[in-house]
Image (cartoon, rainbow, N blue to C red; front, top):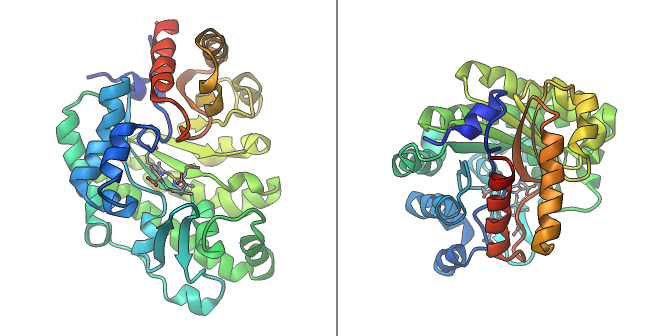
Length: 341
Ligand code: CP3
């Protein structure tokens, strides 16, 4: 099996450097659009045959070194009793937003086997279909990011409702965070038991916080997840988007791999992270619009910096955008493999 991704996660410098891309399955691929034309996004997530099929598309079409489960970080919120919808052009919407003890009391813990069987069935199906070709990554949202969607009721620019709760109702904030943390531990644990060979925790909104508030209001919960799952023995990746100012705290999370967005050069990130860190990242997805020669230079520079870390897994600094031509995504993956062989 192609195990360069797992070996790099464990701290080995590999030839070539492994590569996978966040949102490698998605709307930029015509093959995804074809299936998406027949089923809405949540139906795709909840139908193991469809979710497995789109998970495998980038493995077959692009030659990535890892597959990532096709699902969404918001799936467990629905299982906890929140109403979740994806509205065209508006992104996810949660009703009602959770802003009081009353609304909180309508939420409950989950039993993954009963409440999200489709996720576990997708993983089992994928392990069969991948038959060892590349490893399968499972994932979840980090508690602070999930709490943001739950409390804001969807996407936000100001984050005023979650910050208001953090500062004016700290007991309620802690109760929400602890419930989400417990749910996430059992959710990821069930994914690993079903066959996920690594896991990534996505903290898309952790970076909106000051250092102190990230440490006390986000990191402690992410840390509890990594500490609880360590005994499972699979590599754990932590991605804090826009978290350049937080890296000395992120280092304390207990994750095996730290994923970086494009704002912080790997070389600079290794100062707060330490040279023994294993890093993942960090090409700006929009650099995929560059002409080939310029793209090659930018990839070479990231590979050069990656060599300064204990080990490096190549990725984008955020997800592939729907506007990016699939040929460019494939080209980037080929260049990464060629230059690091
Ligand atoms: O990376 C992968 O290929 C695996 C699948 C995956 C999706 N979402 C599929 C998806 C993963 C790992 C996610 C994580 C996710 N979901 C995050 C964290 C990562 C990040 O992007 O910062 C967040 C914040 C979400 C929440 C979410 N899901 C939003 C805000 C949206 C709407 C925005 C958009 O791009 O439409 C989604 C929808 C979503 N999740 C799509 C996909 C393929 C698009 C669905 C479609 O319309 O076909």
